[in-house]
Image 1 (cartoon, one colour):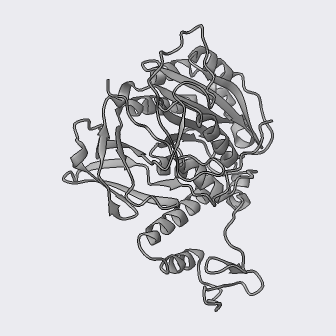
Image 2 (spheres, one colour; image 1 turned 60 degrees about the horizontal axis):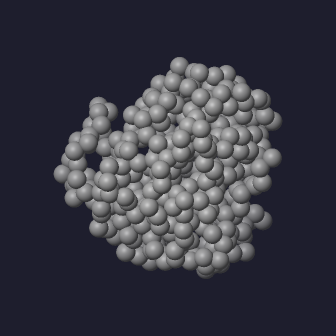
Image 3 (cartoon, helix red, strand yellow; image 1 turned 180 degrees about the vertical axis):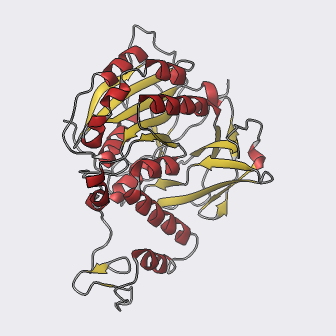
Length: 396
């Protein structure tokens, strides 16, 4: 079997572009033996200045049928508008999977705890056929690791079914950030995924939008979200509660002057009060030289998407999928679909020709198949020495 050089971009303090390199695979532990992933665990090492980006891709007909027969040269991938040489990773379906189930127990999530009572069969259908490790993070106003990585799906399903009501918070960005941290030490012989059960709006996160961008883009982790509606009373104002670290009024093109309610331009002039943020951002981005303009526009788009619908935005940006559910029946249906799609994704990889620091905009298309639909990650992040580490709130 060909063991893949899976390298995940990480954000460790004081590092340049960091990557993980796999050691030889180790036997999977028996059912009686549990394994805790730690930075000095099997298959884990750190090397500097090497970047390999993975791009899982799902290809379907317009009627929704999966397509399995494509080759690497059937795809065209651009990174900030520059076409990249691609490799198609083989035998991905049988590769071990490490997954964090991230479940909202606070806010509107309190109304759905009973929907998780009978998920044993769905989890077995999703993970039973491949080597796997699953952990559970529960969150309300803050995230908590309620089940360490385990191969025992019965234990996982029991823990899900036994969750109790949390507080009124729904700190989704904090929970995603925390879940990504749980996956960082996972050996690179494993694929990585987060299964997110949450509402669509954040309420109470301390993670800023920039930190969220780094968290969802800095590892080769696909996020599958199955979302329920937020409480109507909270939905309108929830997006405004997300912390933003965009420049303030004194700091240039992307700032806003609260005294005049006018947009402040790079040259110090102000635009009309009716000018929209979207227009302002586009005008500012247009001052950048290609290919940075594409990266900046992708960052703006992802920031705005996170404000509108976090569960959908994180799924689309990482190459996962987003679903909506109302009850246990629709939840099981969605999990069945995810179970069918996880092992049947193409996994393409490339070494960036220009790995500049920050967000990269990724576009994946098919050359000669206009009737097929391809879904893949839309961005990834490269760190640099000046980027502060992502802040993760402490667990309860």
